[in-house]
Image (cartoon, rainbow, N blue to C red; front, side):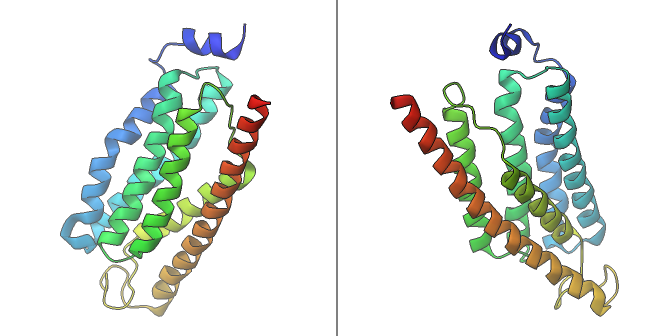
Length: 207
């Protein structure tokens, strides 16, 4: 029995899909916690951080469970990347709204992420596009950068009372900014590789 036949017979009611659905449902609460009081509420910024970390952990868990127990479904193939991009997208947009990430960074990353996701979904039945090692590294670096920037780290006149005014916390904030810059570079690089891979597979199918 091939994988496609197994995926069709696999029920959508399974743990990986439940975790994916929970990530999608968590996005509005995540947005509220991040944006409350203009992003200057230290307690809610911690709540946003926890929600983000749990989302990243469950993303790893549901993928591993789906592959290990052959619980891959059409719903999961569509909903899982949407859930991932919804969480990271809301993190970028929210951090830009509160002034912790430049808007041009958010726009570039979101254009790349959603174009890749939409293309991946559009060719899902014709071309198999597994996640490559560079994409996995990009995802990890991006998660670390966004997770760190979600914390109420003081910088300039922002979040001054979260940890006190210690210089070390301000340095840490800018370290996460550098981490985000690396993530942006990896995002563009892996995106270029992805589109090149799709073009090569399509060309081979035509020949």
